[in-house]
Length: 120
Image (cartoon, rainbow, N blue to C red; front, side, top):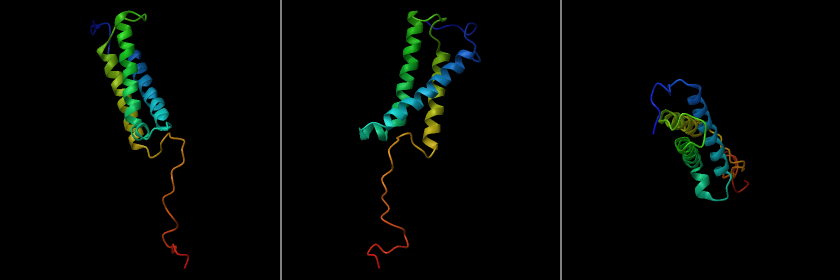
């Protein structure tokens, strides 16, 4: 079912590809979810992006196991690399103050703090 350690080293270039693939898929899916008209998806866009990215990684591993690709088969190490890539993207999106929404933020400030709202 899974490959052994001799055929699948931790530091193989394949692991970097898995990490980068899930990292960028999380960014892409989060960006798409943040632009939707549905408030639930916009509020949870980072989670949506992360979950969809991990599902794509799991689908790739399932396809490897079934022999759809020319690879050595499914690998738990590939799944770990997918998870780490999605986790890094999740942290970046959570910590960086900008969003990929493309929508302007609603201005809730009615004026400058030193300004009298009655105009006096």
